[in-house]
Image 1 (cartoon, rainbow, N blue to C red):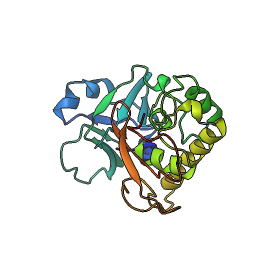
Image 2 (cartoon, rainbow, N blue to C red):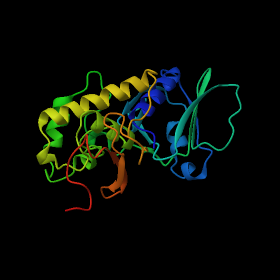
Image 3 (tube, rainbow, N blue to C red):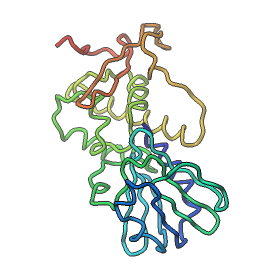
Length: 251
């Protein structure tokens, strides 16, 4: 699934359209029924920004278009005269460039979702105090790995960066929020920001625990474990030695 850094990269690419009156098309029938093209065609694109896993496109007249890529969506930018293969959900034609969204999943005029998101992990500067305050509001018996994926608490962290940041801060994804100190939570958030910002800026790297079940931990050599977590059964990855805590299925 595209995570926060992927949306920020898309927002950067789409800046070439900001300030222009756009021709808007919705070639895919699932997007056409939303009647977005008649509402947006000919309007000036005023701003594009990423907040968490959401891409927000602000058009003149106060219209805010929200895009969420879910598992397979993507935004691409082409020269205006380049062919576009396939059937995108949305096409934004500017003077020299065209932005196209494929495999739309969520594409709608925003109904207030953006206002309900937590602080963006990739904000500059990130609001770590605000994130901590939100993480302390819900049920403190919730597992920290599950809580980090709740976009209402912290926007932008996905399964990859959850696993990697918890490993770096030596916190088990299975520990309850009540068992995790503010210092540990902040360290985890800081690692997530550092990793995601590095990926956004093209810093090379590779996963230490994500999708490495059974392989040796790069820090201590113990076998990496994995287990579904949360209501959505997203797979957690962790080292049972470096990230000690109650193991799943043992309660």
